[in-house]
Image (cartoon, helix red, strand yellow):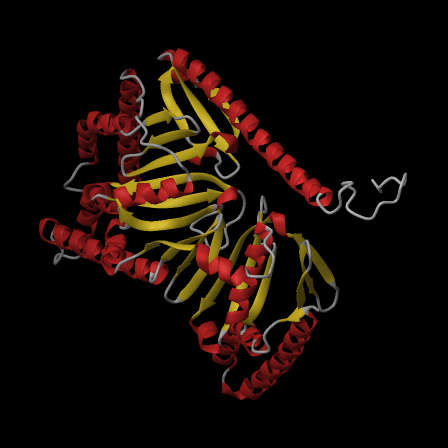
Length: 514
């Protein structure tokens, strides 16, 4: 029998809908004056009644049902809509609750299917316990488990993997600070501040600049720490069968599942500060849309942990080893140095043109930006030193980035395309890049071996293609073996019923149905 939404969905949905129109009443009151206030209040009352009637109809006509093979959703006020979502297509099931929803004891459940660009079905809103039970039931149906003994089996298989500590939560706010923003402010202040000091004598460049930088750093740090606490308070990660489950959030609580069989790649991220402190984070990339993830197709599995612990947790998801990275040849550094030097020249030229257009004089000439050329060799070396790739038995591992270093682990059987490419500038230095694309990575986020020797790139592409074909054959053989084993077990059960192996009474020459 189809189930319904929680009755408290009606007042909450009405409140959310009216909050979108409440500002119209305020603006109308200010612009029209108090004389037309009764008219505005009456109009607001009509909107309230219409909204209430619609939400009551929506909740009454919304229902869902767990069938043998699909999760069915029925909705619609003016036009009816029915959706059948096969269990094997379900990728993520997320439950979210903000502060008001927690006070009312309701929750929102969102279902994402593999390859979808948006949430397939959203149930607004269920009783909080019902939402958790429905999520667990959908997980069991995905795994093909029966309801008998499911609770006992789930409790037995549930394994705690990670729980964030208060220290790690505060460190997350520290390492989450975007240092590139502060470096940008440090470069632009000497150019912008002199124009302010001319208009206001109280401003002195050498006195104010350090305090402004310190103040901006403190504000940015405070904002980063607040965001970390609000987003990842109480973060927990556990393993339940072939799924990972998580729970996090303070103002808005998220809980959901990450199916391990849908994982496209595992990404370890260490920004410059995290590397110095010995910490890293782990994200799991899946195909399609991620309703509560950090980005499309990406979900945070471990927001911050000690580096060794983060690698161990990543290996729980994908069983890769300790990779030894191959770097690009040293002539790639020269390419990076030329690129960065051209960037400094362009920035200097644009800044000089801007100063002349606005016609203000500065005691610090824009030509001082050319001092950035001194840092070009250092920047080129750091970029080169943090690049690398490794080919393991079952995985391709790529590393890149200095400010924020990303180590991406891709199982071969998840690879969609392997591309070898070389720009005109790479060909001049006999370099090429090999890009490994999956369903969860696109464009710049795809793991790659950039700027390696052109001949080595061709060999690497052939090696990766061979590993991909071998991985696909191995998985195909595994599936076929599993199917044969199931067929054998099924036929064995039938044959064991009777001596003649027909699974029934002896009917002489009668043939069993095919």
